[in-house]
Image (cartoon, rainbow, N blue to C red; front, side, top):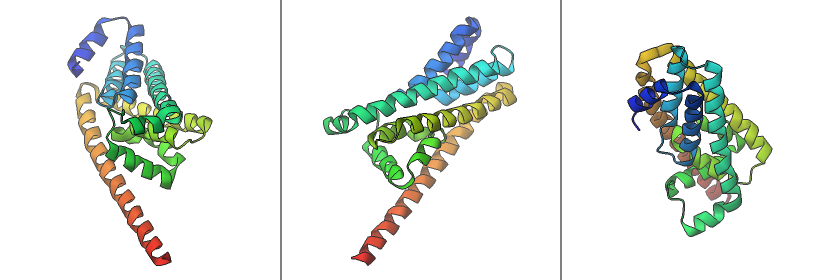
Length: 203
């Protein structure tokens, strides 16, 4: 469904169903990464800005959806992660991303969970790897909730402020995602090189 179609549909139905739609899109984005959850959240902010929705309602629905999606994949990773890897059934996740994010957990642990919403291209992989790493569930839930709440509030406020120019925010986010992923990749490569050098010296 295009952005315009979502906006038209959201403007034509009862607001209660719009909140449900926002939460559902936020949830599905975590399960099926190609779904543009951030764009829908920004649209929710725009609808709140024009008085169609309540800002608090948009925050609650999108945060609940994002959090639920993260935790579902977290428990999938915790219970079935290694079996899925062995069976090669992770259809939506590249092995390169899994290897990269696993490296982040070796180095940064719970900090990756706290920042997961800011890594749009790797959120689903982060939740899976957090489960595979057998991190403490309660701690992961608290950090994931904080991450979802902060990120969604930022998007919703941006959607309110820019009004009909909300599409500019989605373009900026795409550029931001590319920069962040490149920087994280470089950081991981640097860490890997330093670790290899340290082992070589010890040897």
